[in-house]
Figure 1: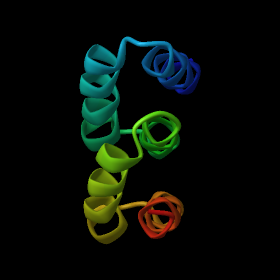
Figure 2 (figure 1 turned 60 degrees about the vertical axis):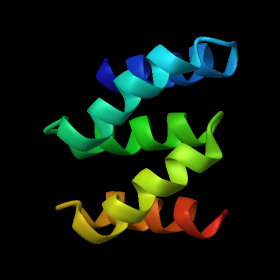
Figure 3 (figure 1 turned 30 degrees about the vertical axis):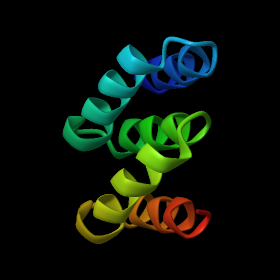
Figure 4 (figure 1 turned 90 degrees about the vertical axis):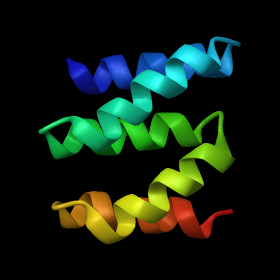
Length: 80
């Protein structure tokens, strides 16, 4: 359910509510205990704010506990 919420926030961000969406997605990507939600939040952020997502991805690629999240973050970071 929280993965779907992250995806919905990405759509809201792309539709013009980027300030609030970015804040919530950044929080989810950095504080959510579930790796799939952290990954979904980062991907959703990257769908509308490449710059912010790239900065966050740089940190996540090095520090996230889950290998899959680190791999996704590295891909987003390198897509600058």
